[in-house]
Length: 537
Image (cartoon, rainbow, N blue to C red):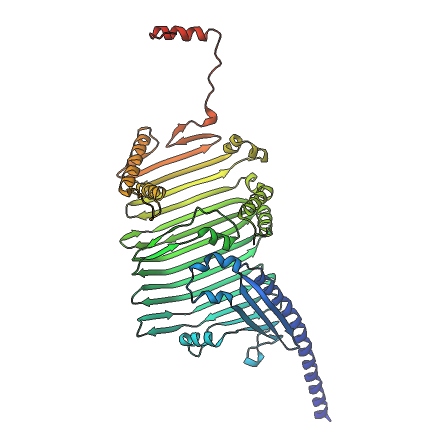
């Protein structure tokens, strides 16, 4: 009798567990769909892509999500003429991927993974036969990319992306390619407001015997981001690169539309004046031990951000630079205003809008929303800048701030300028300043190569050097700058509407005294002076 009772109890227990597992899987499936819907909304908000189709088929123990993306041609359009002809057709293609979702509470049970979770998501990318054949050349039988996403019960999760390494070589063409892989881990909280990121790319090498080579190693990015009380994202982010080497053997012409690149990335028009063009001549470039770090913190309702950038060495042919240190802080930024300004700018429609109209919308939004940034005593500080160059060393320390600005001051240019407080201490090689002036002069006088009359650039450079020498001599005579062994130094202080350069006061327009009003006897006195001087009235 006892064994029978035990069997009944065991059967009931097993049945209860199955019912519980089924109910838990159904509940986990619903919650997983909510989490993945948030992810899809984030993806759909990216300006680089447009969602062509999206579907979600939820089952009891598993679900399937399929998404098709296409490139936003209105954003990529300005750059399409710069792309190789065999790459342009890819812009018309779609990116299709399918998420295979296994529901919790133990979604990895089939692979002996007993960690509890809402769901385990694996991503499969749809590829044409030609694409698969091409990737197989490099990766062999390994999947070219693996994406897994473990959704936690609390609404957060862990995303892991892995691209395996490969070693490829073409004996006939002399092309070698060595890729050491890529690994990304993202640990995110519910709502994606808080997340930790770690990405590593150990190295890459591309050698083309007739063209040159490109190589980098030791690329690592880490971040720890969380929302502050004001809603602004706080935390740290850091990128390090061990070495970068570029070596090209041919002259490569370039014409880069930087204004369109800024528009592509930030949706802001900045004009046509930052578009460089020219030619990359055969060169060798290397960069060693590059690092940047950004730390953002919050004090009451104000945000403080500090950024550091440095490298050990930068070489361009026979020119050697480094080390470089740059340490900059932006302090006492009004957090609620930063958040409102970001939200207001993000809501401005930009596709198909005339650039002049769009620019006015940005300016009006900043004027309407951003005033509290200026009236809450913001301050920009250059804690340290140091760069060793072939001609000497450049150093800079200083700060720029607004103190006590009122909104009414914006309507009075003199009152507005008097609210600024500036301190700066600068030292740089005379040769560096000369090179900058000569380069600017060449840019100003350069004409199209097809023009019948070409300026004599040697004369332009000599003129620029002569003018600079004359100006520096005048400044030295007036004690505005010091020069010692080819090194120029000065310091500037501006506060309360008073300016001094190198501890010497400089008169400003609003400090000039008006001439006193002439008296009744002034005309007679003036005539008398003329007669004394031998003048005739």
